[in-house]
Picture 1 (cartoon, helix red, strand yellow):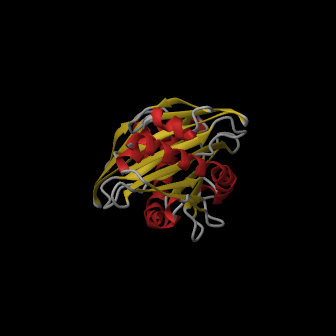
Picture 2 (cartoon, one colour):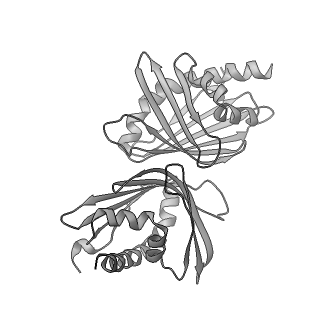
Picture 3 (spheres, chains in turn orange, purple):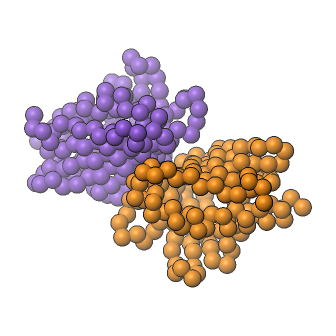
Length: 160
Length: 160
């Protein structure tokens, strides 16, 4: 696997943000679709465990994803701030069922062309505290590479 | 003026968040109203210069405030993530008309009782970069004390 096809996670010590970088062999219109069409989202999240309960594709729209599996059952949700077609998504994120509410983060996804039919994805998440960032980091490290490998498969299937 | 009636701004060097603390001689139900009722918001922002263009009081609702005055004309807007009655507001914030879009921040307002008819307000803003935080700091320092003094007057008028 080439260096650029590896999922790179940058979380500087003591900072309250986290960056994820990944390149895909797909045009950015398709990578954007993978983040905004429920039928595609569920495929890379893992269709056996995830359900897209709500996904309103508009500024002010709500989204809610539900997991059920080995780790139990939990849900995450948020509000779309901006959907800039094929370019950028900005939304809020919150885990449901935490002991304390209000642990919200801001997610910014950037889709940039990186050559013919190649896209550089940047996922920038800003947490409401360093502790929240540190608490989310291990779950991200555990899952995001699998998500991106499933995206590779999804794009291959769609493009062929 | 007592120490607690001073608006306190905390912005640690190199961090991407900013905290504002203030105590008001008003119950938290009233302080919450001052943040969520357009007729009250415009009074402490400064009715001669500000217009509440949009304010949808619900999760997923949009808000948009417009300034026109000595500093020119500009607008700011965002989306409500959560409105927890009398307790907490979480919303996104973005200035319109910047050279580059996507400079969004997350605002968390907390309303806590601090004795009889007293409320401690915490405004916690998390920016998408340290540069954005530093760029907003001087405008906040310039305006927030006036906002809070006008809130004092507003509460006095309503309570009497």
